[in-house]
Length: 307
Image 1: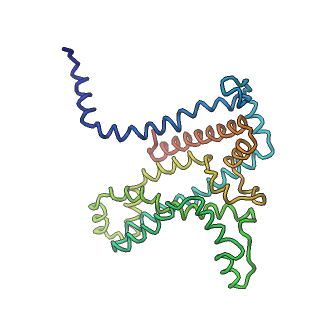
Image 2: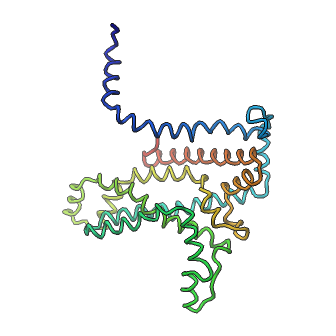
Image 3: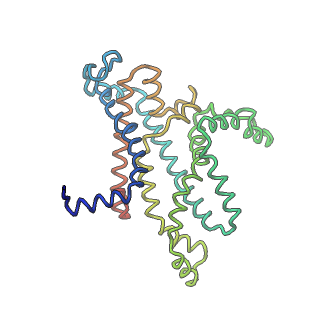
C-alpha cells in the first residue's frame, strides 16, 4: 500500500474539495491555449518570405525585412497616428463615462427607475457591430435623422461619413454609447464594497452628497479605476478593425485608416501574409510596451498595479 506525504494528501483533499471550481476554470484555460497561445506559432511568418505551398517551416527566412518595409512605407506614420489618436480619444472621453454613470446609478434611490436606466444603458452592448454601423449610416445619411434636424434649423445637410474630420468623433461617440453601460457594471460592483458606516460618518460630519462622492466614493474605487486605466492603455494600439472597416471609405482614409484595417487590406486582400504578420506583431509589441509603462507609472503614483 502506497503512503503519500501529508503535504500531498492536503493538496489532494483541497483539489477534491474544489473540483467543480477547477472544472469551471478548465474551459477558459482551453480557450486561451487554443485561440491565443497556440496561434503564436504563426508569428514566425513575420520573419519569413512565406509561401503558402511550402508552409511556415519550409519558407525561407527573411529576418527583419518586412518590419523595415513597414517603417519605410508612406502610410506608416498615418496609420500609427490614426490608431493612437482614436485610442487616445476613446480613453480621454470614453473612460470617465462608465465611472460617472456607475456613481449616478449608485446614488439613485428609486429602485424601478434605477433598473430601467440600467437596462437601457446595458442594451447597446448586445447590439452587433454590424447593426450599430448600419444604424449610424442611416442616422447620418443625407436624409437621416441628424440631417433632418439640421435642415429644420435652416442649414444644409452634411454628408458626415464622407468627411475625414468627422470620422473620429463618430467613432468615439458611438463607442461610448455602445460600451458605457456595460463597463459601468465593474464600477457598480466596486461601489457595493464601500462601507456604509463611512458614508454615514461623512453625513454626520456635515458632508453633502457631492462631498461624499468626492471624498469617500471616488477614493474607495480608485484601485479599480487605476487597474482599468492600465488595461485600456495596454490596448491602445490594438484598436478593433470591425467598426472602422464598416464605416470608412476612400475619402476618410486620412483620419480613419488604422493599423488593423491596413493589415486586413495588405494581408487578406493583398495576399502579403508575411508583411501583414510583421505589422500585426509590431502593433502587439507597442501595446506590451505601453502596458508595462502604464503599470510602472501607476505603481509609482498610486501603489496600484497589475503585478
